[in-house]
Amino acid sequence: MTNSDVSRMLYEFAEMMDLRGEVFRKNAYSRAAKGVAELDQDIRELAEEGQLQTIPGVGEGISLVINEFIKTGKSDKLEELRNEFPAELTELMRIPDLGPRKIMLLHRELGISTVEELKRAAEQHRVRHIKGFGEKSEANILQGIKMLEKFGHRMLLGDALSLAEAIVAHVRSHDIPLITVAGSIRRMRETIGDVDILVGTDTPERAIDAFISYPFVAEVISWGEGMTIVRMSDGTQADMRIVPPDSYGAALLHFTGSREHNVRLRRIAIQKGLKLNEYGLFDMDDVNLIAGKDETVIYESLGLSFIPPELREDRGEIEAAVSHQLPQLITLSDVRGDLHIHTLMSDGRATMREVAQEARRRGYEYVGLADHSKSLGIASGLSEDDLLASVEQAHHLSEELDFPVLRGAEVDILEDGSLDYSDDVLEQLDFVIASVHLRFKMGRKKMTKRLLTAMSNEYTTILGHPTGRLIGRREGYALDMDKIIEGAKDHRVVLELNGFSDRLDLDDLNSRKAKEQGVMVALASDAHGIEQMENINLAVSTARRGWLEPRDVLNCLTFKELQTFLER
Image 1 (cartoon, one colour):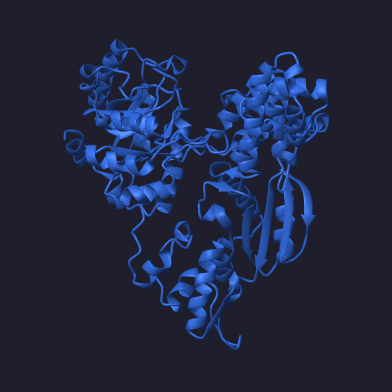
Image 2 (cartoon, helix red, strand yellow):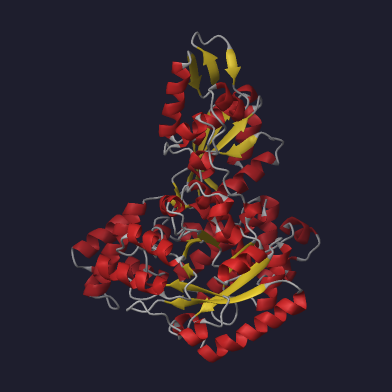
């Protein structure tokens, strides 16, 4: 039982309370879930010591729920809540801007329980006649359903990775050491269909028992020594494949994919008089096993350099591996700082000091604070006076901690491309992230011009989340990305790769385009709380998919190198 498991359980409680319309209890469970997620101590230790109520947001009632879950792997109260609502109702909550109150109203008035029923009702104009709805909200519902259908039943990478790692930890704790995540999660694709787990063992029964005993398994779909499939309580399917240890490397290669990459490898094997499948690399007679335990040995036996999983998409990685010219991909340890973090001064949840201390704890050489600008009132954007006062505060904090705290800002790009602060103010900042947060629906030429104008400002350092997409919820702007990359090169502006799981913006393809044009990329957590500084991990993963090396990334520079860059 991991902290992630407990946090996920509490978030499910919050979701159910939301459907009930019990806002206070929903907020209570959300706070508790967040408190557990941010723990740096194993929650089981706190439970054993009777210290659960020391976790922020956890009171007596919720501590009893957590204790039961840790001891039994389930919660009777949660099971009751699951039975109270049709399972499909939680799927409706994935439709953008359709909150729980409206969902329950539609459920009561029209008997709607599924996305398909809602779509049919909206198309038949029955929704607009319900109090609180109208023609516009009906159209928005249909647009939201269209986005949901495009996204399908796929999970965001961050959510899928968290679930997969929790399953792996659970199974491994049952004395199954040879286990890992496979499939598109291992390749770090931005969205995930099913969770794929691979186990190498000669005792499949033990692995299966451990897998199906994972607390969030709602249904065992199929069960066998080679493969077991389960469905989680949120509808996610997880597949666990079991192979002998001698075939583990070959199976990991095969089930990591992509299909196109594997097809190319099999062709190379045939050209060398060999045969490659999920059991190993053999001679053509299927008699002699050449390699099977280790992926690296299989690649070497085919005359290739080892290809990192993130590159296995048949986008030139085979050719680079043949000539031993694969990029030296960026790793988390190459990142020397994070330049996009919000504080309590705008819509963040941590003080400057707390951010700086966490940055140092992570081994960074520096950190950059970037609160919102004045036009973004919804995010408590800073006035010019408040921003300038915070510049002094940041510099004093740097001296006190003997740790560089850079004071920047995430400055709104206005409709005409101008920035939300005057040049006199921008000049006093260490760096400027220019971002769009309002008026997304502009024509392609107009939006492209808007961003190019923003980048032409001499004080713009970084273009924040350049396409503005929210995966599964909002398409990116209509934009000529080639011109944006060209403009970034002309004005020496850095393009951000935002690590929020629903952004990952730039994506991998545009990150690679930027690299090819000599445009630097900044990896950003865009953290609004200490725990969200972890977002940098997903930014690194996407950067690796984009073939980025440390030399391509702004915040892989040393502090001295960064100072030189910012003083240009």
